[in-house]
Image 1 (cartoon, protein in one colour):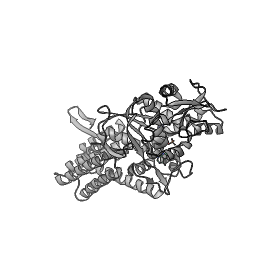
Image 2: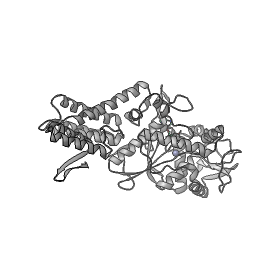
Image 3: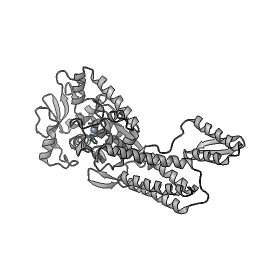
Image 4: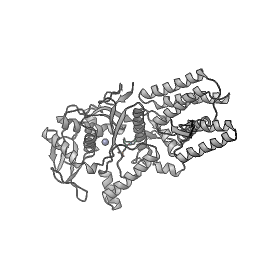
Length: 462
Ligand code: AMP
Ligand code: ZN
């Protein structure tokens, strides 16, 4: 059973998708005005782990991740650099894709851009207007919070706090109530604009996500993800817009990732206390160690970023890989070792159970290291038997699948496989059967199974 914390109820709940076997997942993507920092990537890596985990559990995930390519920050930066908005946002969208690939995050099925979804936004605005949830003032369109009693359910903020938070969004237009938030911003001199039924202007940030999640995942979908800072006002406003327009609850499970901190403070651009991935790679750090660090603390807990932590992550990943390499190198010991096989099977079960209980990655990694310790000491004293070896290999394969990090060295080129096979043939001719077996084992640890046939050796991926 998969259980996840749902921010809406503040409880860990059993996860059951709307359509059996399928999951619709929407995550708020980057604002493409600059390089993302590793705090942003903590959230993106956590969503990637969620997605890989659900897939590993046999579910088919459809993942949509938007790119915010129009807002105050993108406009300000394109003006400062004297380039068009699209030139700026394309540049940072590409940088984002490169960073995501370096961090081994799987691409979303769709990366919709706000500027290409005006029609979807207008559809929502028209519905909101027809139902009395939206009103025009001073060339802009606002959401009338007083018309939507469930407002505040997700963030559980009282009216005063809502008022404080809303100030962030206010642009000095005349609203009916200070709490009301902007849906469509009337054109300002010198800024990009779109034609709309309400005049020239541009969409508010919250509207973008309501429109794009609905377009690609429907009125109601399974999981909406983002960092905790988005609970209010962004996600609260998304609910108001989507539910106000369709009458349906848009999201079944709200998945929020806690912050990456530096010296106890949220890592953010505005505080200046941030590292981009490029900063760290430039200092010689390894992207996979960064991914390991970001995933090693469960998403429900804050993670304090330190260089010592990054070094420790690097060492942990190296331990896993040393084990995998050592394991791939050794020939199998004779006989069976049911106790060790059983112990390793228990580690695998714990690995799964701890992930199924709200993605406790720290406990899952502890189970992996328990298994590694047990198998290592068996290798120290006489070697791994075939039964235990298979169980250990599966544990590594599980780790690779969920954490998205390679442990076992992979043979990707057929040429490499053929080369090893011909080396094995030579060893056999020389009657060096130990070497021949070693090569067969090496191939096996990398997922290649050999078959001796009258026509020669055939191989296939296990
Ligand atoms: P932005 O590009 O500012 O829209 O943020 C992209 C994503 O990063 C959002 O889901 C944010 O909630 C998330 N985020 C921002 N800062 C942090 C942080 N320090 N730790 C974790 N996630 C963050
Ligand atoms: Zn969003």
